[in-house]
Image (cartoon, rainbow, N blue to C red):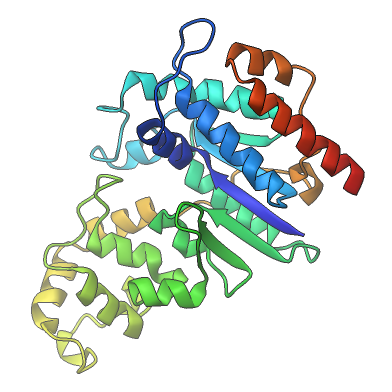
Length: 295
């Protein structure tokens, strides 16, 4: 079977800014929640059988303790933040396995789930459903891939190299020197995407880069200023790589069967009534009947 791992945080943000505002029977904004639920149902209708969704229950994580500039919830609309616990509860009612992250981040849960699923020989392919560049470090050949569902684009290991110029295992090092504005760390001065790709394609990890710039591969231009900048900010570079490295020790599931979608729970109808979404109930019920018939 294939395993689909969905970035619930990305999906909630995407739908919040893409779909019209809508409120439930209590006046609570739930437009983005309905959008994500509908999106998950469409995955099931399209043949997805094993699904896990990771969310940032709170935006802050252990990385905020490592680096004060790391991303926070500041500036995120309250109408969006308030939908995270609603999404998590509604997905669980739909029968979907959810990982709400507090200490870790959603990306860590996705990375951990991808790594664990890859150990199961019954799994044909793991699709990490997010365009987030951080998750590119988890890609392995054509078995663990990224799926950008909005653009219907699959990125395997060759796709990671084509996009970044480095292999998946070098992505944390790449982000360390280039920086990641979305996560709030600046990278190393003077290191852009092209320089990072050139250097890290020759030396996959920061520790592999010769300290003497004269020993760098001749294809690398501006080796002296790049070297001086990197080794002058060495501790920062290592810290940024730590921030960019996804954890693989998040508790996610016991066996792959935990991810199998078996239909909604008894309280899902209550959720659909609350969200004023009879159509969603109908689609989920029909999908569950189909799944039961195929079992």
